[in-house]
Amino acid sequence: MSNHFYKSPLLPDPLLGCEGEKILTAEQWQQIRRPEILELFHEHVYGRAPLQRPQYLRFITVDKGEGWMGGKAVRKKIDIGYEGPGGNGVIHLYLFVPAQAIRPVPTFLLICNREAENMDPDREVQSPFWPAEHIVSRGYAAAVFHVEDLDPDKHDGFKNGVHGIFDPPEVPRPKDAWGTLAAWAWGASRVMDYLETDPDIDDKSVALVGHSRGGKTALWCGAQDERFAMVVSNDSGCGGAAITRCKKGETINNINERFPHWFCENYKSFNGRENELPIDQHMLLSLIAPRLLYVASASEDTWADPDSEFLACTHAERVYNLLGLKGLETLDMPAPECPLHQGSIGYHLRTGKHDLTLFDWNCFMDYADRHMKEARL
Ligand code: GTR
Image (tube, rainbow, N blue to C red):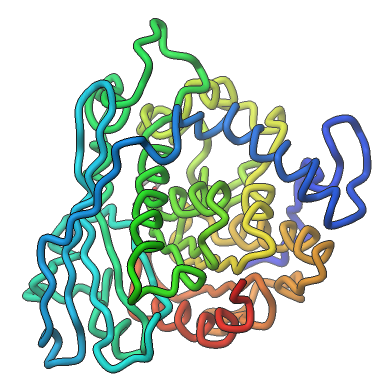
């Protein structure tokens, strides 16, 4: 891994407003610059959701039972039903709450983008992708939902899922209309709507976790929805935690060709023109401030590009500093398996491939053990 100084591209400044004014105080950040940056990501990258909480949103506990995980957990299955002009849908939320813990408990919510077996609520499959037993044993509630409950991961002309349900019938579709990642992010916020109502859950201590396309989603959700106390991006790469300018591996052109449904139409105008973007991904990370941000990379994941993921963290740090918080506190990429857990931005590089492993989860929980209580709003 190289020291980022040798490859640092010229990046847009998170602390320079659109009118050219310097952002010098926490108040200016919150009132002026944060909304500007959020708007730029809506307009050019992820697109705009037509609504937040829909008028029709229902939480139904379809199952609640003790005695799971050898008596260590209570399992709940919650159906989060939503309805709009074009139909209705259901998010199936699975939740394991530690039986002995003092309530309300801090929680890890995973956005699952892998095969549904990885989140088996009956625990016949115990995948490291969602190590619910392990999460519970460390005193956290383990929550998960699947992205396909919001929108299928294929280019269907935005006919199915939440687009079909909520989109106004505008033809042609606006170039800043929400893509699939924004649809999934919208779903994570609806899960938070439920968690706020559950007396077992400490809704001020919820960490949102996503891997890869799920990691891009976690960041976009956490940037908009300030109810999440901690946001974790695992191997999220292009359109996630990685700086796009001078990025190795996947480019904007690659991602828009292979996944034309993920981002808004406007993003395609930056194919091969990264330098003309008014933002870069360090500015997405900065929108998580002052809350906890955790970025993880894997050494062999060159498509995502660990150097560019780390670089984004070092540049998001200026916003954390403005808000009186520490970031990574170093400009040097750490060695594999040597997590940086000092400040309000956490980072680790793991040896190995593009994946979400038990090592990654343990790092997220070590970090949360250390910071989530003190950061509690
Ligand atoms: C890849 C894609 C990446 C990443 C990954 C994943 O094919 O190019 O941007 O999102 O899929 O989600 O596993």
